[in-house]
Length: 116
Image 1 (cartoon, rainbow, N blue to C red):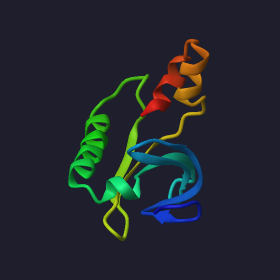
Image 2 (cartoon, helix red, strand yellow; image 1 turned 180 degrees about the horizontal axis):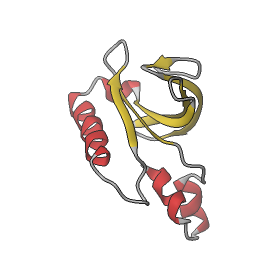
Image 3 (cartoon, rainbow, N blue to C red; image 1 turned 120 degrees about the vertical axis):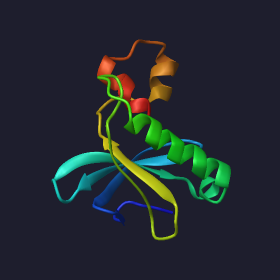
Image 4 (cartoon, rainbow, N blue to C red; image 1 turned 90 degrees about the vertical axis):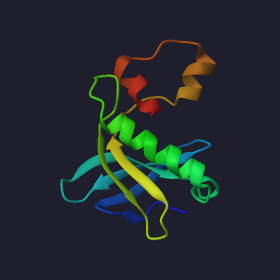
């Protein structure tokens, strides 16, 4: 399982910022460009299921083809040393979607992009 301090491709994982049933999202640093990014990695339980792996890769490719101010940009897609897929994307500061739902309030446009 990926953890803070690990490196995936050109990306150094700094800290975990979110977790769901399918993946874990880390704040990371892209070494070549020195920029802050988010890296989503498939969870270990889902990483062994071909259906989940396919769904995860499809998500990355679908989002990567889109261009919209409310959708984060995908920068890179890859697999770790054990074959678990990951993708790097634009890092957007904001609240967790679960917090927004609990509060019942609206999200700022760029904040909505964080739910990817």
